[in-house]
Image (tube, rainbow, N blue to C red; front, side, top):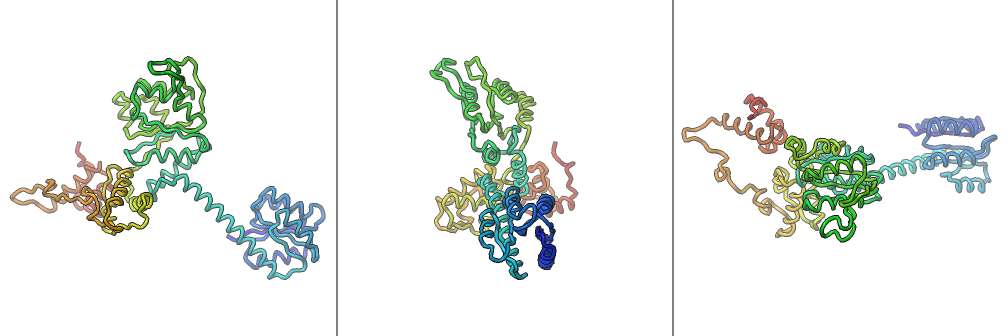
Length: 454
């Protein structure tokens, strides 16, 4: 798109010459005959560059320059001044003009000054966008991913971070739920206030209420002084309730009240405290199933899951595995270490039941135990290499009279689909084949979800 340039000059002939020369260079040009009309056009069309004469009747070029820099500091302004009036041009530069040209000037001089100004503006805008991107990447610095699933997570986090909505992050253990919670906090207006995590599963029931809400002196045996709870510590910031699915049922009403009314009452206390806390919770428990089983309150679930975010398992993020390997290798001091392609292939297709946490631990162990700076398949843990042969683990148990290869292949495909809950992508990964190959086999053997085991 051609850059838009606004020319403001009361000299009609000069204005037309400027317009013609700049249009000849491919720029989109709008013109005004005085400062008042020029400022009105500036507000209307937001040009990339303004070229203005300094000496004009009515609103002077100095006033035009000052107004433009006040309204839009990033807009570049080139001023035109009379020959010999260098002091005037210098004064304009002090007010924020990018450059000046003196009358009379040739068109090459004009084009060069305009070109350089627009190049500088382009670099400034590029630098601004790069800084924004780097800032955003810094907030996601520990979350590595280019897969579609992770891009969707990033988009949700950007959208909800600077709201007050309660967020519930779900996913298997080791998928990075706390990292996402920290990113939400870092991208919010609360970033300068505390991010306070608490693991609801790691604290004994008798202490958890006090950890969450605090207690007053004498509330129970051992309460020798007042204690500030995690809610109070997070005032103004974000409280991260990790493993919230493990919260005892009898504590859930008190948490619900804290979420609804933003007030807490310390154990043994008689007065409530009003708090400004944003809550982000996480769990690897199926809370809907827990509700059905009476282990989790339905009203608390809906209060927590205003914004639900589900993190995909690493086996669903195959595109991210190689990036994570590189990241953790550098993180744990192996910048000069390489993985041979076949080792990377094995690691890429391994299902990683422990998710990202397991992958990081594996990389750290490989770096410590390695014999060289090149890691091959033989260096990988046995569970990755699949050292057990199929006969040893009884994958195939063929009858003595023989068996149809096609029937065997069909049964294997159905079994893979069953193990993957009929998720074709996961089943294809399990069979170490492309998804389109799996679909072809399903069509070939007329395999449909109706065969799903009840």
